[in-house]
Amino acid sequence: MTQADESGEAAWLEGRLARVVWAADDGGYAVVRLKTSVGEVTAVGQLALLADEAETDTFVALEGTWESHPVHGRQFRASGFLQGLPRTLEGLELYLAQAGIPGVGRATARRIVAAFGVSALQVIADSPERLLEVKGLGEAKVEAIQSRWESDAEGAALAIRLRGLGLAPRVVQRIRERYGERAAAVVAREPYRLAEEIAGVGFRTADAIAREQGLPADAPERVRAAAIFALQRATSDGHAFLPRAELTAAVAALGVPTDGLDAAIDSASQDRRAIIEPAEGGDDPMALPPPHPADRIYGPELWYAEVEVAEQLAARVESAEIPLSADDEIARAERLEGVSLGEEQREAVRQALGGGVVVVTGGPGT
Image (cartoon, rainbow, N blue to C red; front, side, top):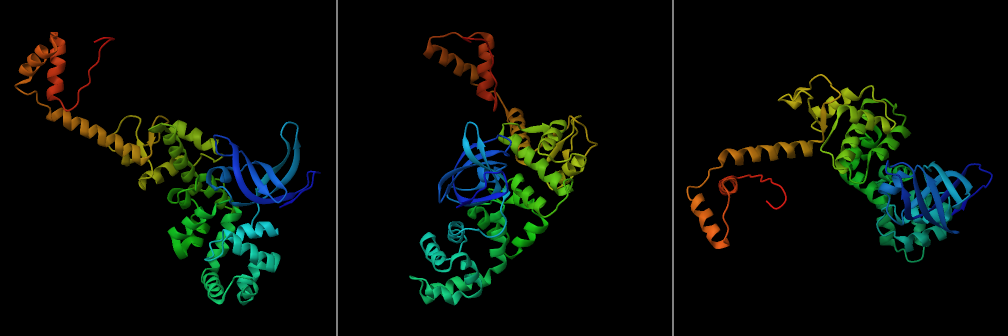
């Protein structure tokens, strides 16, 4: 359902996410298609939360303006996600069906909205006995709905708020399952934990939640979260680490001030969320040496993996022992294959027979 004004004045749009047409690599701008009561509509803007984390058929409520693109035609330019409850009957039906209320799917939600209109959620919250007026809802189901709603009033309010920020129902459920009764407190006081601990919540999502609550742009926890996110993105791009100077540039590209980045990296290192390998190659990366632009900043998984691989290679090399029968085996192989190896080739085979790790190099045909 839409409310539109072609004059460019503020408008709003509600519907179901049909698909993501295009999304920028930096996770910001995106083009999506929404199913509405008047057909599919194109929405554009900073919709990374939808492109990265929402699932098909998820209810979406946007605020913005309508415009006519010279090539793509009429489209909705979103300026943000609407907060709070849906404003249309169709949107309310979609929301109610995805609110996680036991026994309330699309069909039941449709009947409830048909019976009570925009007051449906108020009826569930304040006068649940009236649900008996809805065809197909018996006393047992109504009692179940009432019990769940009453026992989870805070959680329901949190879900509405998170949904208003663009999070898909499945992601909201993960947050509530992970933190239980503390979910609202975590969202309010430690929103960046979501990016570190909840699948489907990235830095931009956590940042939207934090900024919506008035967190300063240079807050230490914001800078730290941006640094961890930049390392994770670098890992996805195939990098084992980022030099401190490149990590600084990556954080700045997210629109996050970097004045407190060194302290944020140190904090992440102390919590083993990042590993600092000094530019001079110090022996203890946990010693937090003075910052240097060429310091290597690792995500912990790849740093420990590199250390483990290096230790295993060293152990194999140290334990290598060429067997006494190596020359006999070489001679037998030469007879079977009808070849005669040169001395360097023989030495390579000896090393291969006795070494835990062997690297053989040579030009074409060797």
